[in-house]
Amino acid sequence: MDQKLLIYATQNILQEIEEGIHIINREGVTVAYNEAMEKIEGLSAETVIGRHLLEVFPNWTQENSTLLMAMTHRKPVRQKMQSYLNLKGKRITTVNTTFPIFEGEDLVGAVEISKNFTDVTHMSEKILDLQAKLVNPEKYKFQVRTHYTFEHLIGRSPAFMESIRIARRAAETTSSVLIHGDTGTGKELFAQSIHSASSRWDKPFIAQNCAAIPDTLLESILFGSVKGSFTGALDRPGLFEQANGGTLFLDEINSMSEELQAKLLRVLQESYVRRVGGQQDIKINVRIIAATNEDPFELMQSGAFRKDLFYRLNVIYIKIPLLCERQDDIPLLVDHFVRQYNESLDKDVWMLSGEVSQWFKDYYWPGNVRELQNFIESAMNMVTDEHVIGREHLPSHVAELLRGQTYSAGAKEEMTPRGSQTLAAFLRGIEEKEIERAMKLNGGNISRAAESLGLSRQNLQYKLKQLGSDLHG
Ligand SMILES: Nc1ncnc2c1ncn2[C@@H]1O[C@H](COP(=O)(O)OP(=O)(O)OP(=O)(O)O)[C@@H](O)[C@H]1O
Ligand SMILES: [Mg+2]
Figure (cartoon, rainbow, N blue to C red):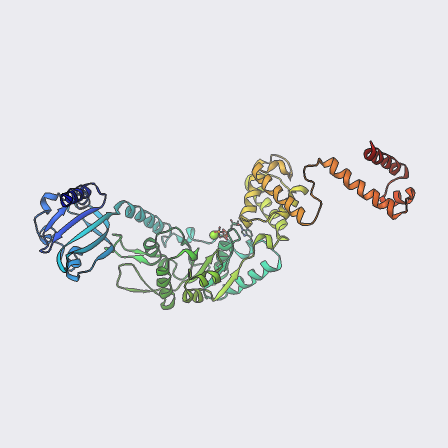
């Protein structure tokens, strides 16, 4: 009974499951072929079951059929991506896992599990095509030009000037550069500036973010692909070829998989690329600038970043300081962005109010320069014909954020926190303490105490009376 149950269950699973399933026996004859597989390959189970594999699929051979290979080698073939025209002429991309089936020691057949990736692949293809169009060599002059030069980098604090000094020196060489900076500190600006100041300035500058792109896709984006390779793509140059003679900026290099890191290293060492699925080595001459927002030394220690690649990239190391580490640059940046938005938004702002300036100074700027720029931009959008940006121009959440920060900064400087007191009561408390102190210092002499406080005798007398009545009344 249990045996029967198992058989029925298996039959049901075969029909319900989303993956295509194809089972052959030891002779290579199909014994099961489910509905999902019918859809993928465009064949009906009737035509396949009971016939030999190579009879049904004339293009397959003993060597290229994963099912037959799994049997010959008596080993599974896992997660193999395949792209082919199915019998209806439709291009299909699947990821297959194939394994032999044994009864004890005896090989009795093989099964293939096929996941349909056609739609996903189709989308990736579109992205690649768009990208290829964008960096079309004839057009790159307009599209892949850098916008930024060292003149655009605002900041005069020593730590920042040191980063600029190293970056300027990098521009004179073709060595690899590794830029390390927190989000919004200006990594891309630095990369562009180095390119613009280098002898490659009239060649392409291409930026690629390495985060959030599946490995295989990133690989063919970087190295290109050849017609008939697994993506089923047309011949397509990768970014290394497209950036030839120029600079390739690899942003968020820390999120690249270990395997791809190894491939990248090989390309950098040999100065040749081979397109995915291709046979030919193509000579390239590309300057690499890589960026990371995590500490590369720590990444290397933890094993997330390959040491060999790290040393290859880290020929010139540029660390960009956090904005809160270069507070003196804040007014310069504010001024810069105010001018910029005066122009683009057609406003006439001159400065920040004293209060907002102070907030800016005390804030810790987790989003660095980009955050500061965003705050200015949103405030400038609220300005009508005023010349000063005040708290009323800041979105309320921004004002909250900035103000919250100021209080804790105040507390750090050991000012008595006002707590829940009203401002008047708080100030009265301070006044009271100061008067008491002056009276003590002057041995109770009202005239001298008044003088030291910069008050008239009458005024101090009046205040003393008030304090007295406050105290006693
Ligand atoms: N020193 C600077 N002078 C002027 N503008 C700057 C400076 N640094 C950054 N910016 C501005 O801040 C924005 C963010 O800079 P960028 O894109 O280079 O940062 P990033 O380090 O690449 O950030 P992320 O890690 O988030 O990608 C830019 O749009 C630029 O306008
Ligand atoms: Mg960036």
